[in-house]
Image 1: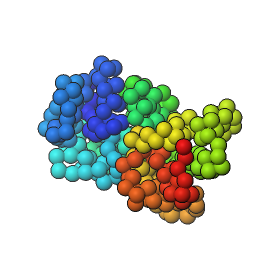
Image 2 (image 1 turned 90 degrees about the vertical axis):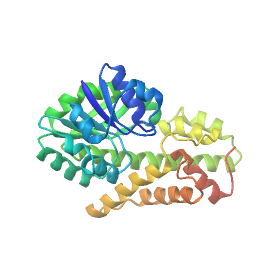
Image 3 (image 1 turned 30 degrees about the vertical axis):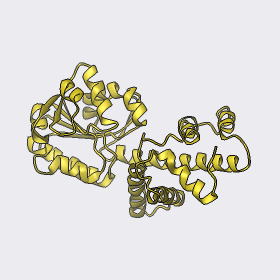
Image 4 (image 1 turned 135 degrees about the vertical axis):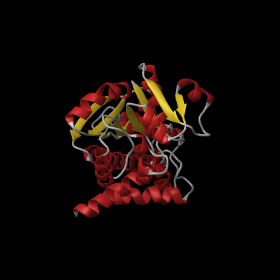
Length: 291
């Protein structure tokens, strides 16, 4: 198939590469930042409109709601190149409310729309092991499934448009609170005189084990805070959670506290840290670095 892909970032690039490895022709818009490797691997066209005209399916993987809106409906955007029978798949993590509006506009042009945000980070993207949470009609999902299978392992159709983004917001709440919990535990253990690496090893054999304890605790102990998944992006996702919760009249007190800790990290110059860097805000409060 001819697959348009817009957003060759930390996760988008390996996702597009996996589609190309699967035998698909991947079409991307011209960007000054495109590497020689990407130019050799993908077909490069002028802009988003040209991508949409050339491709059967167009995938977006960009940072935030305004970015998706600009890519779709801005100057030289995807919408101008859509026609009946094409399919737009947004794999970004954005507002569930805006997603429904974008889907309606794309549908009005005769094209189908899927929201399919992902979890698994850079490692999952490179290993084609992403969790993909999908909002779509059954027919659109069935059409896109072979592509999802080249990028992920845990692939779930949750409901209609918007349901994928709701699920991703829920995912980001759980991930943030687990990072906070692991951070608090390691700061506590280290301050009490225990070796945090040995504490982690012991806990991995019990009920407290998690992917966060396995992967992110190791980052915390080794002080490897290069992203990964940047704190500023997790802040964006928690903001979506808190905004949506306000609309629904739902209290998310611990989500709010995790957001404040991320904000503290950003104030320390850490908005570009991996989100495991949240521990540094707790270390500052404790006046103690784990080690």
